[in-house]
Amino acid sequence: MTSSTELASLLCSRLCHDLLSPVGALSNGLELLADETDPAMRDRCIELLEQSAKTSADKLKFFRLAFGAAGGFGDAVPVEEAQTVVEALASDGKPIELKWAIEGQSLPKPAVKVMLNLAHIALDALIRGGRLDIGAEMRDGKVEIVVRATGDRIAFDETIGKALEGDLAAGELTSRTAAAHMIALVAEDAGGGLQYKADDMALVLGAVLPQPAGMIG
Image (cartoon, rainbow, N blue to C red; front, top):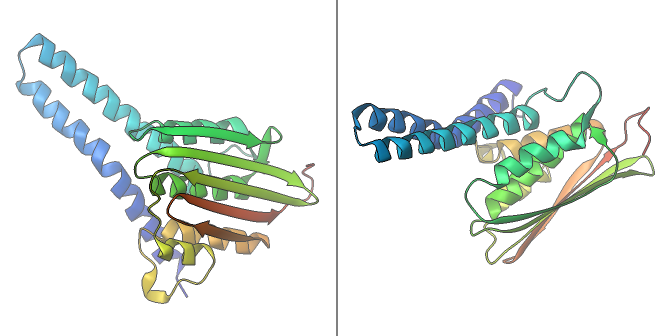
């Protein structure tokens, strides 16, 4: 049984790993700017600094909503807020075609946390870019989420799949599988579940969570 302290530590490690590159680029850019005298090169350094700062901020906003308690004071999160952080993450680097199919203006917080983490897993799997479809709806007392990644090559670690389905062995929990393990716990606590299907060209991730009382689908 993984302790909450160990899981939190691994999630922090993952966050730090993802922020290391853009924050490191900021540090390197500042060093270059301090030594550079050519106006054109200084302009280029500033441009790179702005890009690295934006990437760092985008990642922090995403992880704040995906890992933390962001999303307002109510029980629901505006769909637009979730879309904004995913779109920013998807625009960094690889060519990603992003499509949305979400009914309603808001989703329950646990569903948003699950959806964002599934989207992150799918983006990581699209190592050469591709298409990412994200859908969610509330019906018949349930919140249904589907995230589908398609591309020339899908790189999906089956250990992450085991974490999603709650079959992770004790020694397999790492910073790489921690987010999948976390949302498996979120789904289990809510009385729902996760599933996935993967091949060389596509990865489909799904979740079904009970709809919280008081939310109309």
